[in-house]
Length: 153
Image (cartoon, rainbow, N blue to C red; front, side, top):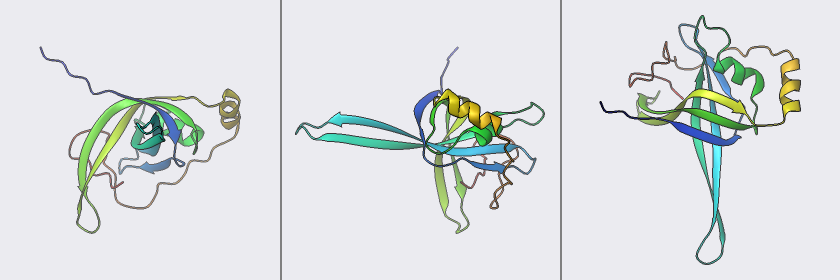
């Protein structure tokens, strides 16, 4: 039997506050970008740096209690350092201008907040009001991970 692995692990910082949306079946999804950087010294002795941005999606599963999207919504903010584990997914969609777009995303399976424990405890103590779903194109009804997803972001 042949086996394969699709696993990505990122440790980086959030570039902006997460966007929280809901699918037509009222499944919550959080989208956020994680920046990872690497530094090296070029042959001429000059220091170089390159930052990569990784689009991540975290889902709540209906009927399973508080999921990753709800946790991201409540506790994760711009600049936070995160450990993200998931799988890479590729998909395409047609935008409002009828242009085909290609997207690479990390479908998140696990998140660890690597920031200060005091900051996370303070965030948990504050009451969080859920954000209303963002207006825009519809999201897929379930996090299938298949090629027929139509997430417009």
